[in-house]
Length: 473
Image (cartoon, rainbow, N blue to C red; front, side):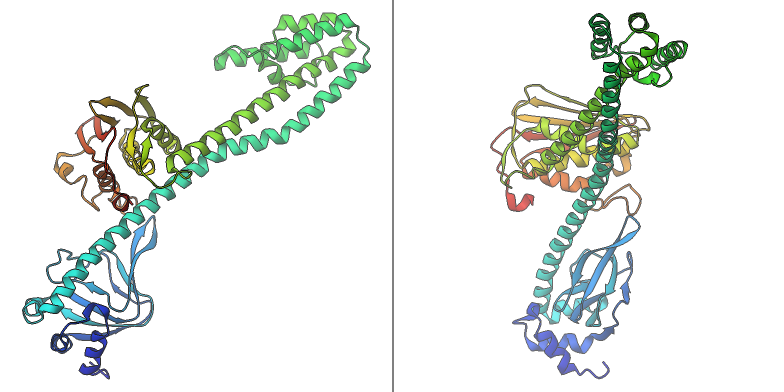
């Protein structure tokens, strides 16, 4: 034991809250048969997956437990003086859950596993304290992993939403930047046209064609649109109009006959500026339309995020619109579905009744099921989400067309920490959390699977579910 005496170790053990009230004789038994060990700061004391063969009673210093997440180490728990680590009597944990690192100089008393039978026989008070601590540790570890899983999910959603928002935001910024230049072009063309001194009859023809360009364009295939642009470009070239891009005129429903009417009505020297005035109006309106579309998309995404998280609602059980929750969940996962070329179809009954519960928690269920389904779907496949009423329940089904769940692992799908994904991609808690949330809403969750079709089904009662806020959260 080096410079530390047995009496000093007993005093340190007696000072720990865990052993308050434990007879000193039992602490002396531990000090006599244990090994006093010191750890330098930043040293790795155990590796993920190693067998735990000792009870570790931390006397001083702190340790952190780190797991691999996305190629980086992430701390999920820490322990300090009075905490117990390693193996314990009656514990089913046999391997280390993550890398254990001393975060500062630390000391501990180690009791080897082969001493556990003697420990439980000779030290009943210590054993009782260890059992209570083991239960608390299991709860804390479970809660830490749950929080880690939620943070991972939030990180993935945040990344996807950032990408999803970037597209319309960039489009809006681009169109806003160009819109001013387009308006300047339109004003310059208008001044030049005014200086041309056209008659009222000539202006009427030009204005009539310009108004026709404001009508919504007809639907055209890519080939038809390209042919139309080529025809207009040829017309402009033939009439010596070189300062007007053909794509602007081609984007509206102006016809070659309309352009010929203008060419016949105005003097040839004025034709270029007249067509430019018509085209500049088309281009400016198209930019304004694109700007409105992009900002509307941003608004829809923000609304979906608010709906998904219930960020503007008090954390109390309430009447929940499942249809809205499913739509918001699909919106926040749209980037992931698109990146995998998976088509997501949502079909909800138009008169779907509301359920009673926590909307943000139920949205977590839809998010985890949909996220898994997108991962499981075949390349360029389809995920189908349906919701309808069955008796006194709302039934939500999430189906994918992937390879299916192997028979050998179906009974483990809802087990905590079980995952078929590679290390770092998942915690194995998604379906366990989903099941807990569904059960706390007095609902049920199950699945059927075969090659080409896997369906997860959730049943949530329409009303009266006595959800318990403290347990859900």
